[in-house]
Image 1 (cartoon, helix red, strand yellow):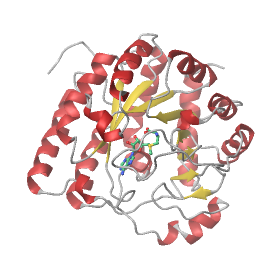
Image 2: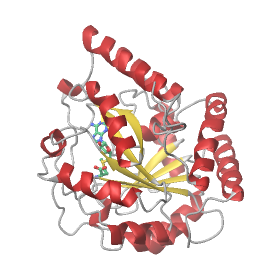
Image 3: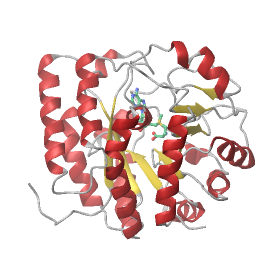
Image 4: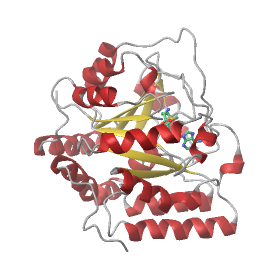
Length: 345
Ligand SMILES: C[S@@+](CC[C@H](N)C(=O)[O-])C[C@H]1O[C@@H](n2cnc3c(N)ncnc32)[C@H](O)[C@@H]1O
C-alpha cells in the first residue's frame, strides 16, 4: 500500500465529493475509534481511559467506508494512537478501489518514527497533530507534561523523511489567538503545514475560551489578515481564505447557522453507532434515521470546527475552493509543501 496520490485519485476524490454532495451522503466521515485519551485538554470534554469500551473491528471500518464512500475519512477520538490495532484500521479503510483521502488526528504523544512509517505505509495521507501553543504552554493546556518537547523533537525529524504529509492543527481560543503567526512559523521551522479551526464551548460549557469582546475580536481579525498575507509567501497554511474569514465571522456572530451535521459529515462512535457530531451525541443506527430525526430540524450553529468548516458549504463555495484543495493534493503528490520562494512578507 502506498499513500502516493495519483491524478486518478485526485479525480476520484473530486468526483465522489460532488456525487455525495448531490445525494446527501457524507463528504467527510469522522471515525472516533476510541473515546479514551492520554491528554486532558482544557477545551475538551474527553480525557482519561475508558474501561471495556465496545469497539468495532478494522473489518467493520472497511465495510462502513465502502458502503458510505466518503471522499474524506478522518480517524479521531479520543486519542486514536491508543488503539493497538490502529495500523490495521488504516489499512482496512484504504484497501480497495476508490479509497478515501485519509486523515489521522492525534495529539502525537505516542508518535515515533516506527509508528509514523507504519501509518504512512498503511495509507494515512495526512497526519494532523494538534498544537495549541508554539512552546511549553501547550503542556499546560493539554495537561500533559513534556508533550511540546516530544513534538518539537519528533515532528521535524519525521518531516525530514520527506513524505510532506504532516499538518499541525490549532483550535483558536481566547488563550492562543495571538499565537497564530508564531504557530505558522513553528510549522515552517519544523517543515510541516498548519490548519486552524475555532474553539466551541459546546464540549465543556466553558465560555472563557470563546473570543467575544470587541478588542480581542479586532486583534483576531488582524491576525487572520496576517495569515492570509503570509499565505502569499508560504505554502504552510492549508485553510482557504474563505475558511479563515468565516472563522472570524463565527467568533464575531457567536454562531454559524445552517449546520449540516448528519448530512455533509457525521461521526462514527467506537461501537459503530452514528452520531451527527462530537458535540451532539444522539446515537442512530443509520444515516437515514439521523437525517430524519436530527439533521432536518437541527438549528445548532454553535461550532466552526474543522470538519464543519471544510464541508458545511454550498456547492458553489466548495467548487470555488476546489482549485485550492486540488493544488494541495497535487503539491502532496509532487512533495513540495515548503515555502513557495523562501521569501517572507
Ligand atoms: C478531540 S481531539 C481528538 C484527537 C486527538 N486526541 C487530538 O488531540 O488531536 C480532535 C481535535 O479537536 C480539538 N478540540 C477539542 N476540544 C475542542 C473545542 N472545544 N473546540 C474546538 N476544537 C476542539 C482538539 O484541539 C483537536 O485538534
